[in-house]
Length: 476
Image 1: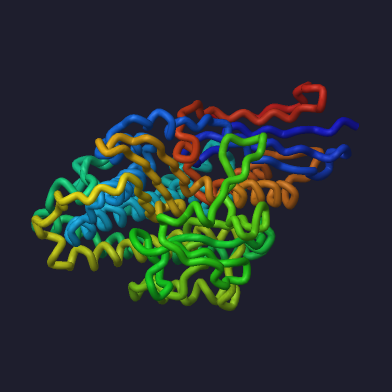
Image 2: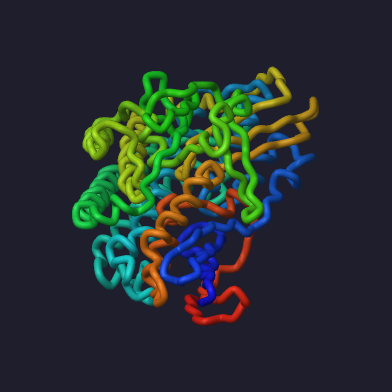
C-alpha cells in the first residue's frame, strides 16, 4: 500500500493564505505528521527602508486590512521613541480608544463570523452552509447583533481616524485630531448594546463548551510558555506596560520593557515555511516556545481591571484550577472575555475628561534614532522596531507580529488535531475542517506575518507518493 498525502490549500476563514499537508502512514489508516505551511513571501521590512519615520503609521497598516489599526498605533509608538516625543496624555487616551475599537471589531468578527459557523452549525456541516449565510439562515437575530458589534468597533475607528480601514490619526508624538463631545456621545450610545452582544457570545461559547467537552479536552491540548503586556500589578493590558513571559506552570520567567525584546527573544527557521518561529532564548528551541493572543494573555495575568470582564475571568481561571489553560479551543472563550474588557475600557476612556482636550501633540523632540513600539493586537503581541538617521529616514526595521509568535502553536495544533481526528482510508471533509479549525482558533493574520497577497480558492487533493491524485475535494 502506498502512503497518501493530503493537501488543504488554502486554509479558509482566516486572514491571509496558508496550506496544510497531512502525511499518512504507510497503512493510510492514521497520520504520520501534519504541517502548516505559510507560503507567502515576507518582504515588507525591506521595502520600508529609506522611508521617513512619519510615514510609517500610514505605510505599515497596508500590511493588512484586518489589523491596520494595530500596525498604525505600533508604528506611531515606535516613532514616538525614535523622535523622543512622548504623546500628551489626551493623545494616548485617544489612541487607546481607537485600539479598543480594533479589539472589539476584530474579536467580534472572528467569534461570530469566522469561528461561529463551526461552533453554531457544526464542524461536519455542509460547507455550502457552514458560513455567514448559514448563520443568517439558522440564527438571524444573533447574526444581526454580531454584525452590529463589529460595526460598533469600526465606528470608533472611523470617528477617530476618518475611515474604518487604514485610518489617518496617530502620528509620532500624538494624534492629528481631537475628539468632539458630539462624537463622544455617538460612541457612548453604542456601549450598552455592545456589552449585551458580547455577553450573549460568552453564553454561547460556554453552552457550546459544556456540550462539547470531549472535543475540547482532546483538541490540541499542550503546554507552552505565554507572553504579552501586563499592568504593573499583573492585570490585563492591551496598549501600554512591560512585557511578561511565564513558563508552562504559570510562573514568571521574565518581565522587561519592549525596548529590550531582542535580549530575550530569538527566531527559529524551518524549511517548510516562510514564517519564522520566535522562542525564549534562555530555554532555547523548542523548549522556549510560547503562545500569545487571548489565551496567552489570560495565562499571564492575575486579574482584569474592569468589573464584568474580571468576574468572567475568575470563572474562566477555574477551568484548570488557576493553572495555565492549554486547550486550543478555549481561545474562543478568552477572546470574548477580552472583548468584554475592551467595551468596558472604552466606556472608562470616554468618561475621562482629558479625552476631549486639544493637547494632542508633542512637538518637542529629543531625537534618539532608535525605538520600539509594542501593542497587543487582537491576535497577540505586535512589535515594531525602527532605526533611523538624523533626518528621520528609516535605515532598518524589524517587525515581529502576533501570528509569528504563535507559529509553533499553530503548527503543533495542526499536527495534534490531524493525528486525533483524521483516520483513513475514507477521509471526509468534516475531518479536514477540524484540522483547519486548529489554525482558525488562533485567528492568524498571515498577511501580517508575511506581508503579501494571494488567491483564495480551496482544493484538497489526496495523492499517493508518486503524485497520482486519488481523490479531490474543492471549495470555491
